[in-house]
Image 1 (spheres, rainbow, N blue to C red):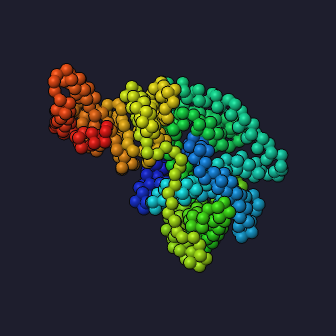
Image 2: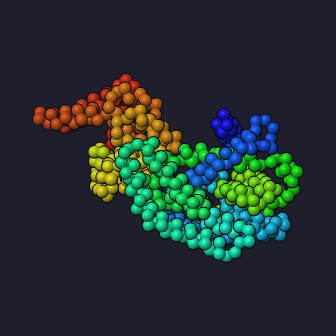
Length: 576
């Protein structure tokens, strides 16, 4: 079956590796690399053929492009604003310092020539975003100022990869002079200028036309076509394929369609990225590592010490207090995901030898594995340093991103959603509307309401409404089968989030009960109760008795059969 059999083999191996990685509480990247090693040419058992491996690598290029496209979609200067000094200035300084140190290690300690040493410096400069964020999350550090600084630096590191994708290939050409490098940079600048003029107008217009069709499938196809198509255009110009995909993502990032585009492209990106990391795993030769275990360990020690000192030094220079600076030094020495891309490009261009690439890949994987351990021992090291050097006391500060807080998330911008928004506005209560219907979304924006375009069931879309800091979520449309994944996602990811939903019939209530909805509203029942109240106003009945009777009837109806919490116990007490 040709490439089909190779794909199935790689996917099964990657799945097995991912299951093992999850059991060990490690990022899936390590599992994919392990899966690639299992079916690679250097291990016994099922092996992907040489032709099949080449085909997998070609498909993996799509994963790299989609990864950069998603990075561009998620890029925003607003995210960097609270930590802009160290992110916008400190991160480039760190990358340059680490590249210089990496070149020195490769050239003088390992005896490599200049060009391979430059590639090693670039390989060493970047940190592993997935591993670091996973470790921060496991240690409960997400949401702190430390995590904000680290995320800002990681974002800028990824951005610094882009010019290297243009410069390093030009620098690696035989008998290169200054002119090819200048010409490569010039083409990059001209391409950026052309994309800024044409892309900022054309691409959002295309997405608006596609979004108006209200088809997730069509929208995802349009996003993938734009990302990969612009990448291919840069390839035809002699520039990097991933570079163009990143530019396309940045052009969409400031539009209203960015969050939905990111959510729709994520599964496709993850699938092809799996192939990329599996193809990297196929290149790893464990027998080589065992035969060269001493050089591998020496290289890892050099990377940890040099990168750790550079991160600590840069953080200190840019005003980060010693506790956090030390945590950055201990936690950010791992080799990044995009470093694998640099090794792959250098290997394809034959600017590094097999031994050099094998050494770099071994160092990358082992530094990733050491990241959680390093984070764990950092507080102990700080306590020792605090006593020895009289540093400031350990602090645990939270971080405010400057986004909306203590707000209400309204799912749907129909008549009910807009009515709720209007009343909340009168009481100066902050809110965010999430709407996938383009005309309704545009109508909400026209009224000046804060709104996010996209399907709330997509994590990236819902997260854009800052749910971690919200009081509650109101699902304005009556609950249907399509609402259950959204409710389940909110429940699993935001345990304290209160959810208000509505139903059209009693048959929907049992499913909502399983979803642990806090408050359920039956619009038909509420309308009938209000009409009854208006009718009783024409008779000589005390308001207290009317309210008591209607409240009793409401409780009876809501608690009949398998209905959820009564509104007396939930919504009525909270004024809903």
